[in-house]
Image 1 (cartoon, rainbow, N blue to C red):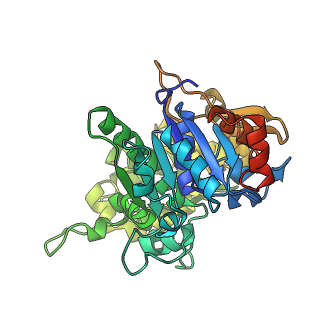
Image 2: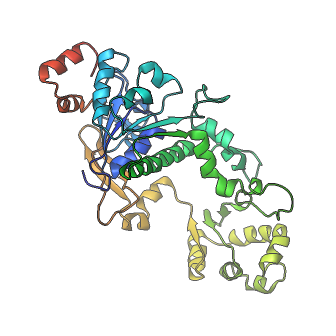
Amino acid sequence: MTGPLAGIRIVDCSAILSGPLATMILADQGADVIKVEPPGIGDLLRLSPFARGGLGAFFANGNRGKRSIALDLRQPRGREILLELVRRADVFVQNFRPGAAERLGIAEKDLREVARDLVYVSITGFGDSGPYASRRVYDPVIQALSGSIAVQVNPKTGERDLVRHVICDKASAYTAAQAITAALFARARGAGGQHVRVAMLDAALAFFWPDGMMAHTMVGDGVRPGPTLYEIYRLTETADGHLVYFAVSDAEFHGLFRALGEPGWCDDPRFGTLAGRMTHLAALEPLLREAFRRWPTAEILARMARESLPAAPVLSLEEVVADPQVRHNEALVERAHPTAGVIRQPRPPARFDRTPAEPGRLAPLLGEHTDEILAELGLDAAARRALRDAGTVA
């Protein structure tokens, strides 16, 4: 393995996305990640659609770079094998509901007995205690509680809606990945192992807060109000499609007016300055909508580019894959999986010039590396066969 985390070993008992994506990020950066799954179905995300050759796209996109062992932690021998894996590991990750790890005998205190300097990571929906702690949770629930849905307001109907991807799961994953590397850094400086707790609700609030909760940041009176981003973020309709643009300064708006063929608006006291636009926004918005509808998308984007305005067409998913900047960046890579065929995925977005991190192995099949991992623990073929016969591994 290459990358800045080469030499770090992670035992990953998490499922779905908040934990698996976190450990995939670390695998992309060179860590050796062993994914522990129950025999049979394994991680429930393996049942995701867009599947081929025993591998679903959603699972593949959250589990690249890992090795899989199918291990029944409910059996005493299964727990013993997990402890042996942890003894050789730097990090352990789980996203069970509070209390589940204790019932399985793999809580922090249990694993600390065999790995004193372990970084133990617990990802939960709401935390270890409190009125919601025992509730089952998925991404849409956290969207509802964190404010994300409150700002997804359709400008035409006023109805609220979900963000159409698992944004809270992914925010939690990136929070956990960063926290793990911070804990490893602290350990290298003498702090020892520690327990890192990430609640999805907390991660989602922190992710949403900088812009989404501006109106609830300053406590008390005397606060100068203004429009929020969710009030001004809009798609713009053109003669043949849609685009997105964003203008803030007087210079940008003047460039926009010229691009739209309305240079006179630059000198209009209602629209030529920031103060004027803030006061007369209700008058300006319908004029802009009408002006944009007169222009084909490609033509108005070209005119806006000449004015150095930030703008882009609204791409379909097929167009995203073919976008010239995406291709220039080599942001996507296609590789052949032994059973699932060619798989297209993004490269790790952080590029390291001295410790390059390239995508590791593609996502594993369930139990694909069980024998390999058991052999590393010193179990010979007969011992491995006995474990399979007992249903402890698969």
